[in-house]
Image (cartoon, rainbow, N blue to C red):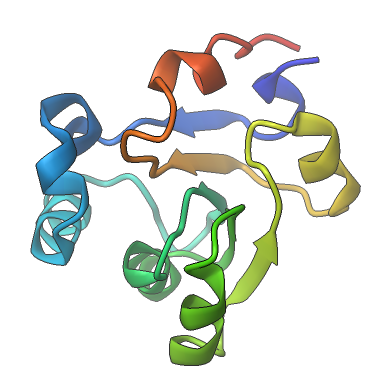
Length: 127
């Protein structure tokens, strides 16, 4: 099973390739989302690793629909701060769980910061 079953496009923001420090800074996320056309108003986005929801809210402002997932405790704060966003507590590397959401995504936006190697989640791009 691969990410090709979840969405047509996989996005690993350039900021994730730069340094883990930048990932934790919301201004960096804001800059990257404004600079790059990762998401359009036609996109149904799955954000993996939403943490406190900062990037989720930026994706929400640009996309058609956003589902933000995280397995950590910070998700409770994200739900409280951004109640207009669809949050789910699950492991984003569990593709079966993502498919059980029953939502057709066209973009997966990886927003993980040091909890696992990015290659762990992106090695299964195929169907």
